[in-house]
Every structure is written in C-alpha cells, then in structure tokens.
Amino acid sequence: MLMPSPISVQLQCPSTFPLLGNPIRFKSNFRINHNKTQHASYALNLPEKNDIFSNQKENNGLPIKENLDERTTKLGRESLVDKIKALPSKEKTEIITSPELNGDLGTILEFNDMLWALLTAQEPDLALKLFDEMSSYGLVPDSWTFSIVIRCYCENKNLGEAERVLGYMLENGFRPNFSAVTVLLNSLSKKGKLQRAFGVLDIMDKIGLKPTVQTYNCLLKGLCYVGRVEEAFEMLVRMKKEAIVEPDIFSYTAVMDGYCKVGRSDEAVELLNEALEMGLAPDVFTFNTLFNGFCVEGRPLEGLKILKLMREKDCKPDYISYSTLLHGLLKWRKTKTALRIYNEMVGIGLNVDKKMVNSLVRGLCTRSCKGRKEDLFEDAYLVFEKLKSDDDSVIDPITYDLVIQALCMGKKTDEASVNLQKMIQMGFSPRMVTFNGVIQALCAEGKVIEALFVLASLNEGGRVPSRVCYNILIDELNRHGSSLGACYMYGAALKRGLIPSSKPQQ
Image 1 (cartoon, helix red, strand yellow):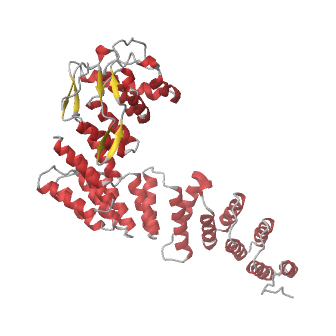
Image 2: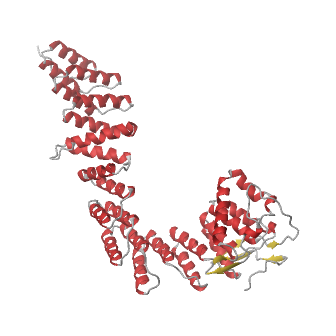
Image 3: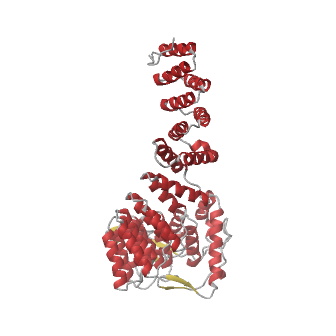
C-alpha cells in the first residue's frame, strides 16, 4: 500500500480497525489547511522551518535526517525538551490548546518534533492530546508520528491502545520503527503478557525488523517474571546454538535472576561461571541477583563467596550488595558475620539502614546476654552509641531494652541508668524486666540511692513496680542494716497490693 501523499486535500481514514479483535478509534479524517498564517510560538521557541531536516526516510524503521547536521538537530530537540520541562503545568497544557502554535507546527516534521519532545519530557498525556488535535493543524500522520504515539501509550501503561495503533499501521501500509516496536515488546514482557509479546516478535520478523539481543533480553526477563524459568533457559541456549543473536551479560543476568527467585541459586552460579568462560564481564547487578537469591534461601554465608568473587573480578560492591547481604545475615541470625559486614560498610562510608542497625544491635545484645563465648557486648554498645549519635530518634524501644539489659550484665550500671532515663524521656515505656535489671545491677554495686531513684521514676510514670523489684530493694536495705528502710519498702509494697517474699530484718 502506498503511503498517503502529504499534499492531499483530504485523507479518509477508517474509524475503526482491528488488532487481535480489538478496535481503535481515530478522528475520521485529517485535513490540510492551505490558508494558515504564521504566529510566534506560545511560551516556546520552536526551530524555524529551515532548521528542520527537509527529507525524512526510514532505515530499519528509524528516521534519517538528510541535508542537515545530525548533531545540530539533536541539540535543537534537547533544547525543546528542556524548555518544556521548565514550564509550569498550566502553561504546558496551554501549549496544546493555544491556536498560536498552529503557525509553528506547519510541517509534519515540526509536529513530530513536538510530539517527541513532549514524550521525552515525560508528558505522554499532552503528546496524545496534541495528536488528537492533529487534523486542526492540517497535517497527516506518518510512520514516525504513529511510532511516537505507540511509545506514549506504553509510557501510560495503556498497552492495548499501543497494540491497536501498531495494528492500524500494519493494515494501512505504515512501517513502525524499531524503537517503538521494541518498547511495546518490553512493556508487554514486564507485565507478563508473554503471548502478546511473542506476537510482536513475529510482527518484527514479518516486516523485516531484525531483533537484537536487547529484544530477546526483554523476553527473557518477561519469562522469568511469570516463573517460566525453564523456557527462559531454553531460549538462552537457542540464542547460542542457533546463532540467533549473541547473548550478553544481561541475557545471563535475566535468567540468573529467574533461577534465584525460584530458589535455584546454585544453577544461577553455574550460569555465572558459563558467562565468565565466554569472556563476559558481570556487573554489580549480576552479583546482586546472587546475593538476593542466597539470602532468600537461608544461605547468606554463600554471599561472602560472591563478595570475594566480585573483588577478584574488579567489580565494586554497591550499597544494594552490602545491604542485601547484611539483611540476610541478620535474618538468619549470623550476627557475628553481620557485624563484620556492618563495619566494612561504615569503613567505606556507606550509610547503613537504621532498621538493620537496630536489628544488629539487638542480635549482638541477645548473644551477649545469653553468655555466648564471643564477647560481643562491647561491639553492641559501640554500634548502639554510633546509632544514637547519628540520630537517636530511630532507635526503637526493643533495642533500648536489650541494650540496657546488656549494660547491666556488663556491669556498666551508670550507662544503663542514663539510657533508661533517656528512654523514658523519649516517651518509651521500658519493660518491667528492664527496670528490675537496672535496680538489681545498682544494688549489686551497693548503689541503693540510685536504685531508689529508678523506683521513683517507675512510680512517676504511673507504673506499678513488680514484686521482684521490692524483693531486691528490701534485701539490699537489709544487707546495709537499714531495717527502717526495709520496713518502709515492705509497707509500700503492701499498699500496692503486693506481698514481697523478702521480709525486713528485726
């Protein structure tokens, strides 16, 4: 079918056309207005006509600009995009509705430039609105126009409309460009619409657009997204054996990610080794896939091997690498190794997620309180103090409770008392076992007065001290020979409805 002539007075277009049984609607006709007058552009300075390439041909679906320096045209478009981005939202809308633009969009090339600029400026809705008004400019859409429209619909996640525009183009002799078809295929793959994505691949073959490795990578990711990992692996094998296209590291990464998501990280490692044998250089995204896979499977220590391999391959771990590994180590209670990774992150200047630091402190305190052979108390307190100095508002009450208990066990009663008061000032309500621990630790060091202050803070907060709390204080007052004080404490307990097991000495 011949392309429509740009000098036709009127082009009749079908109101609807099918693609996979779905209709699409355009304006019923496009008209050329030969009596247009030139006006200054509203808010934007569009390039003059003689600054726009005069001829547009297509090579593999991509426009070629002749008789004009390519770099100059590219800079002109980039300038237009920057100006659109700088406009307030209201003025962007008026660009489309203002009749003053008619004179500046006198050719299909200028119109397409504006469409492309709006799309690039992340204004696909405005681009589609401009396209709807195309007949009022007396212009007829060409292949490049429709290709931009396809991309606009993909940007808006309206893939059904994008497919119908593609169907219209094919039925009416328009040739979509490679970029638009690839974007549509990628969008369908990301949504898991694999049957439709493979349909687009067939269309590419029929109209002579040769798929690239990037095209197949979109399909590989789509297959893995819906859990069809075996099919993705088979496609990867065919790509190599049948020499369809040469797989790149992104091809391998896509299938590796699929394996990791279904708990088959060892097979992902085999693919990594195969990629290395082919001379491909894995990037940080490739390795991060493995970190996530091993951590999900409960094997975070395997991540240490991956970290070592990254360094051997001169691939610098990023924040996601370390964070994923640290999260897995904490989740599976590999606390000592997690501390090592945390220190490494701090050492290279990475800001560790505060929730994970809380989790690390809690893990270290728990191990310390359980009397493990490793003396992790000092490490726990150092991490806690750094967290507190960075932003004490991110410390949660559970972390405070465990740190205070660990301080008591480590005989750092002054620090325990200070942090208990800090916790109360922040509006937290310490657990009763925390109060008991501080009072007991203070009494063990003979600091009865300080212990009584802790009891007072408990009363001031409207909390009822436990019987254990009174027993500790009565025993300590007896030990100091303060029978009167012990009697007072015993009486206070009785008033609270508690009967201490410890009695004042006579």
